[in-house]
Image (cartoon, rainbow, N blue to C red):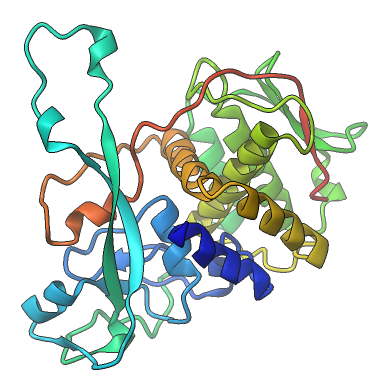
Length: 320
C-alpha cells in the first residue's frame, strides 16, 4: 500500500511516473537510478519510485552507505522507501530429494530507506552535470538494434499501408504496425513498437503471462501496465524523448488512479513483469545479491518469480 500510495501521489499531481524520466538528461552510466555505493542500477518498481522523486541526481544510498563513504545525511531529510523480495531463511537451503513442485521458494517483501545524494553532505559524487556521450549511431538505429538483437522476437509486420492500429496477436505470435509515416515522429513510433514487443514477451513460449479477455478487465489492465512500463524502460535505454504524447491527459491519468486504488498490488506486480520483459528483449540476466543489510539487496528491485500464465486474443493500441 505504501508503494501504491507513492505512485498514486504522482498521478494525482499530473505526472505519469513511467514517462517522467524521458524529460531528464541521459547521465553517464545509463538512464536508470543507481546506488551510489555499489554503482548498480535499481530495477523494477524501484525505478518508478525513484524516478518519481523531486531530485535530479540519479544516485541514491542508505544512511549507513553515506557514512561508509565519509558523508552524512542532512538532519531533517526524509528518505525514500524502496523494496525487494527476500528469501525466507528457513527455505534458503533446499532439502535433498525435493521434487520440481517443491522448488517454488517463498519470498517476503521487505524494504529499505534510501536518500538521494542531494540530501547528503561530504560525499564525492560522480559527475552528472553533462549528459552522456551519444552513441556513434543514430537514435533510430539504436532502437532498431534493440529490436533486431532480440533473437526470439515474434513475427514483425511493419509499415503496412492498410494497417491503422498497432497490436500484438498471440494466436500468430506477431506484432503489427501501421506505416511509419502515419506516426508523428520517431519517438512515437518506437514507443508504440516497444509497447507491442513487451506484450509479445507474455506469449506462452516466453514468459507465459495471463492476458485479459477484454478492455477494462483486471488482467487486461495489468497487462497494459506491464507494456506501458516496459516500453518506458526501453525508451529510456534508447534515449528517445516521448513526453508529449496524447496519452498524457486527465482521462488517461484518472484511469490509472482508479485501477491503482482498486488493487494495491497492481503496480508492484506489473513493474516486476515489465522488468522481466525488458530483460528478455535485451537478452540480459540478473543474479540476486546475497549481501544483506547494506542496501545491496534492494537493488534487485522485485525480480522475483511473479510470472502469470496464458494468452488470449488481439491487443490494439492507438498511439498514433
